[in-house]
Each structure stands twice: as C-alpha cells, then as structure tokens.
Length: 120
Image (tube, rainbow, N blue to C red; front, side):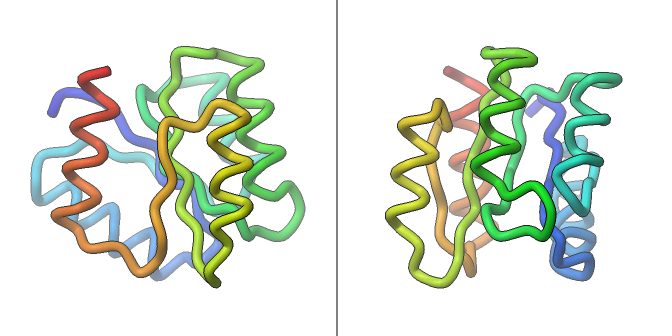
C-alpha cells in the first residue's frame, strides 16, 4: 500500500507499537498523540488516511474528524473506538468517517480496512 497513514491516539505505547507493526508491512505512518498535533501534521503533510481514536484529552476524536473534513474532504478517516462506544462510532460515520473499528483491533483486520480506504 503506497498511502500514508496518520495514527492518532493518546496511548503512546499503543500508537508506537501499531506504527512499528504497520512499518514492518511497508505502510508509511506518522504518529500524533493528541488532536492538535494531528491537525498540525495534516496541515503540513497531508496523509491519505487517518486512524483516529475517539477518546482523547483536549480535542476529542469527533471534533478532530470535523476539522479534518474541513481541511480536506478526501482524507479517509477510520475511527478507532473502545469502551463499547458504538454510538460515537456511528456519529463519526455521519460526520464523514470511512468506517469505525473497535479496540482491540486485529492487525490483519486493520490492514484490510486500510486497504479498503486506500482503494476508495
């Protein structure tokens, strides 16, 4: 997959491990650990796909999603949610997310979703 993926999650260990696992599969990644950092990266180095956690301090995932779509509607956003927050995942879809995934995520399932997003 030639697309660039921005991983946004305040759980630093999780996002670092995920970036490493994707890198081993030749997927180019960048990391942001909060919404403001993610938006700065998107403004300066527009990724193709954003994997976005919903529950973050400061700007939450839904607010970041709104701002991503205001910056560039073509960026595919995959919502990553835990805590059984299906309602928020559905709200993310309404706001323009490509799909939403539940934590914990199987790496092979994630790669399939990333490929689907890249192909759309």
